[in-house]
Length: 106
Image 1 (cartoon, rainbow, N blue to C red):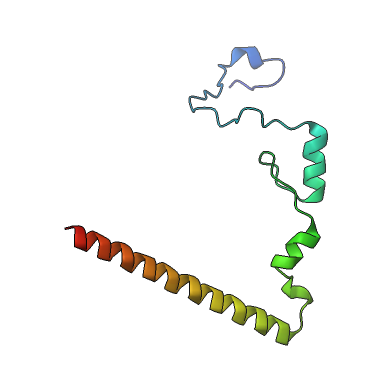
Image 2 (image 1 turned 90 degrees about the horizontal axis):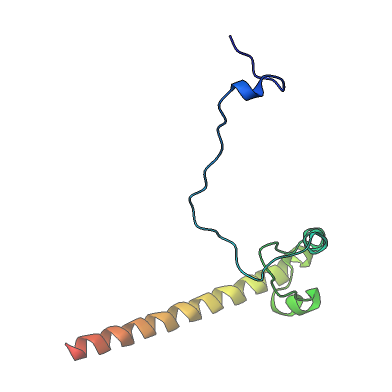
């Protein structure tokens, strides 16, 4: 029985990993170690250079429901429901318009 250790490692066949996949790196998207650590510490994405938005800007558009009372949460929920309904009806009208145009051309 052969035991592999630091002294007998040359006796065993090496099993290296072969990478045949295309590279997923993006040119000019490198970050230094300092930038990676700063991004990680601040909770930013580590995937490439993404724009950083101040929290005060994001609060205008999406308030945090954790700090709202029940009435404010219900109002926010109702606003989102109305917005979703508006988007659905708009999308449905566009689909009907496209289907009407394709049926007329046939």
